[in-house]
Amino acid sequence: MKSYNSDKLKLIIALLIYGTIGVVRKNIPYPSSFIAFARAAIGFLFLLCFRMITHQKIDRTAVKRNLKTLLLSGALLGFNWLLLFEAYNYTSVAVATVCYYMSPVFLTLASPLLGERLTARKLGCVAVALLGMVLVSGVLETGLYGLKGIILGLVSAVTYAVIVMLNKTLKDISAGDRTIMQLGISSIVMLPYVLLTENVAALEFTFAPVMLLLVAGIIHTGFAYTLYFGSIAGI
Image 1 (tube, rainbow, N blue to C red):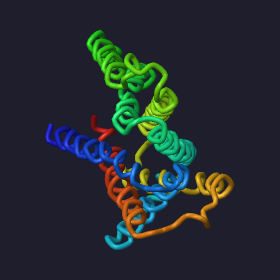
Image 2 (cartoon, rainbow, N blue to C red):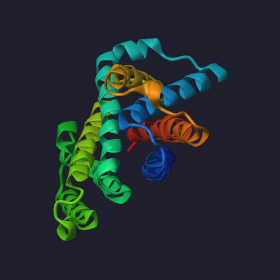
Image 3 (cartoon, helix red, strand yellow):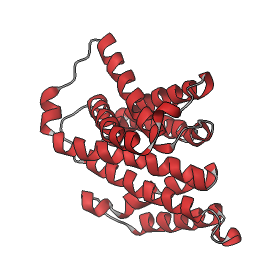
């Protein structure tokens, strides 16, 4: 029971941190693809340096055993962020965040695939969440305004639900190892896309945006993702 409560606390802290990423992204004047890449790369380097300082080695045997799943989930993670950051460009932070947090709804609907029962209570919670999403998004009042951002946010939520489901299938690998691997893979997958679609050399790397990138990479990624994925196994 103590371990379960600890996992719940980790999850709550991670979600509180996630909730501020929209505000951070809105104040970084760089393309979404570059921010997604930088977030993954900074988070990866931060966790790797932390491991080296604390003399914690990556379990190569566990990584090798789960490599296919890690490759797929890591690639999806990069595009998940790309979709979310693009959603912030086409609608408000509030709407994009609400849409993104529909991920638990999609995960609940898919829970039978993980061997869990889909009860009437769960379906009731899903219905209330869907209704809340529609009301908060403002679609009923504004019509098509922000529709592209809403769709991007929802697709991002579906992608994240798939990532969580993939992580549930990982066997005998620590939360730290899986997070490091997924962030590293995500940054490698995103790099060619960024170089092909963006003129990185033309970006102005001034103090404030760079500091916000570091916050997004270290706090919202390296730290928060370790807490989040570390809690999933016990909840």
